[in-house]
Image (cartoon, rainbow, N blue to C red; front, side):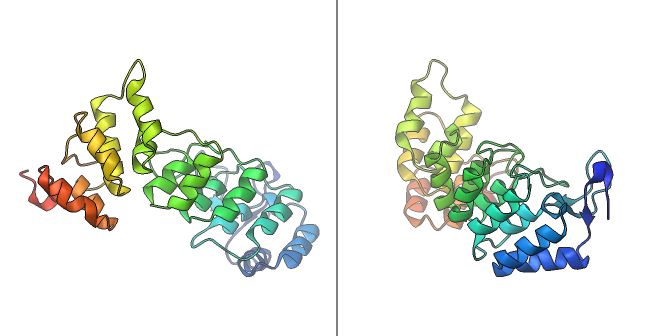
Length: 255
């Protein structure tokens, strides 16, 4: 089916789409390569209901399929290479409720091998559009607790925010934000403190509390205090410390 600007659009039940997705999930690179050769526009096709509307409908690409949950499909790096060689856009966007690239999805699944393959193929390491605040792939990895992917992104040169540094326990980078001519604003300190508790980083949490963080700050995206965040992440060592400094669960707040 031809879509706007001659984009191939395939719904989920299309035989070509079913075959391509099946080959990707099974890691059958040779079969995928044959499909790409038989269908020259397949590498850039949109899977979904893309129809040229301003919001683009809801669709993804085959590179998104490689990176989709739960990730870690066999021969992922070779699959990326085959798709890119056939013309796939490594920075293609999901269209719908967010605008994530395949790299965002690989980061969200802690799929470091695929993450490396996408970066080696030219993926934008700091592409915006994450479901986590519209941010970068690192924002997704941090937000979903995908620590291997988060650390690999940093090692590969991703931009690091104050929140990233606190959540990952990167004390040298965290202190550098406060040594800058304009230190983080109070709202950023609260956010980073919550992130440190989410990441189980007591040293970072102590540092930020000493700089004015609200021990019971609640983020706008969910009803969880830093104590709730630490408990969800299994950071048992933080729970007593937070309690000792007045930390409470959201249900205990005087609202």
